[in-house]
Image (cartoon, rainbow, N blue to C red; front, side, top):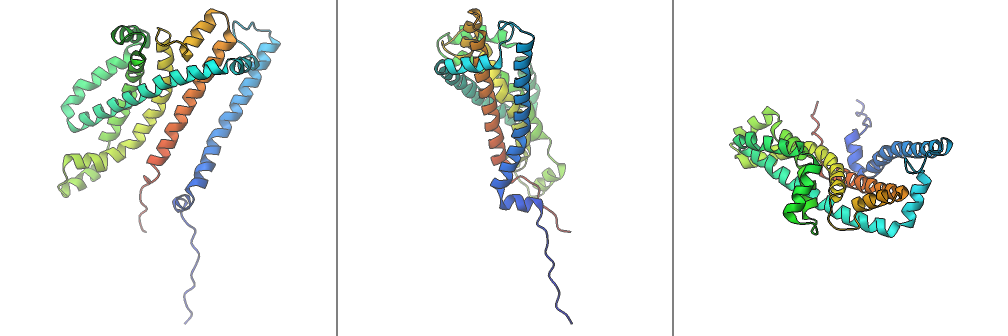
Length: 282
């Protein structure tokens, strides 16, 4: 009687990724970045060619080369504006996200409050920034960044609140039934079932909120506040017909938005790295 022959088994993709998380993560990151890089480079080249061939005036749209030259020339001022605007965007984003998550948790635990808080959040989201900013500047003053932080917090609150609430509520009934079978309390169900289920929804909304925070901060800066911000540079440069400098500040704002988006992606990978569903035996 011959001995059984052991046949090699191919490891599952999840096992391979778990054994080499950094390698897989880097490959995924490169695969995500290079198409966007190629599109950006092609777009900039076409932009330069169109402006040159058709001799478009720089007050309409400057060349990318002129924008880059202005970015280098005024780099210290742009870097200072990036620091000030970035501070407002990040702190306002954090405040808005914390309030939104707290509201979502409360509405999930105490359902009658959802009918009161959801319309309020929707009303705030429907209010234009240009209407909020002057009011907040009147309340909190022109010098301190509180007014601009409040504008950012209001803008990011609604998408995070809605998505997080949806993730907290859309739980598989079998999971809830299992927790009831073990007589688990409501707060433990929230911590062990609802919150893990809501994380993908939360990070999806956080990606949107990260970009909205930069937009809200710059628009709020148009109405006043500390000097030397990106919004202030754009307004002053456009008023002096220095459109290359204005576009250089826009470029810095785009870099800030992409940096926040990339940070959210990293946080998402870290938080969801062990969230893959367990495999079932055949």
